[in-house]
Amino acid sequence: MLENWVVMPTCLPLVLRRCHACACERFRVNGKFRVNANHKLIDAWLLALCTVCGDTTKLTVLERMNVRSVRPELLDRLHDNDPGLAAELLQDPVVRRRNRIALDWDNAWRLDTGGLAHLDCEVSDVIDVSVRFAVRIPVRPVRLIAEGCDLSRAEVGRLITEGKLVSAVRLSRKPSGDFTFTLKR
Image (spheres, rainbow, N blue to C red):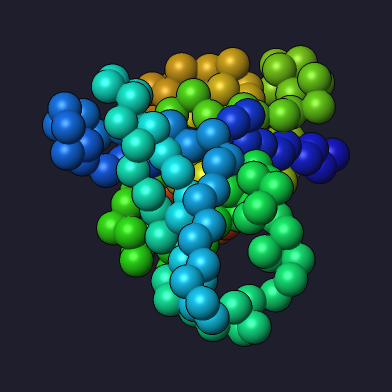
């Protein structure tokens, strides 16, 4: 029997960047944008607030672009402070590289097992599980398996060593995408 688990975001991740006011390294994004047009050129920033002092930092989205080259639906979403657009932009590697930021996904995701995974891990002799990521969230498969099957990480490590937990991907590293595994009890 194949089970499907989904790793889903619960909120926007924290942005890891040093605050120039208090030296804190975490900013909270709430989906607000600032758009500034100067004649035919437009700039747009995603605003983030320091989690300690509340100081604002701007993450560059558009820089000195011709207004006519920007899609009208993107401009509408920027002006409407679309939180979905903020989530999309934080996932964009070009935006992260341009702004020299990383994301902190701690406490910003959950594992949806369909409600039956805990029981199946205890009752069934062999289960096949397909894990899908709704967005790219860097979390180790060992942690997901431990949470989904209600096991400790040490127990999951023991199952891997004994060959009772197998997968085509290395379970000890952060995955780059969806994966499957088989658990033999």
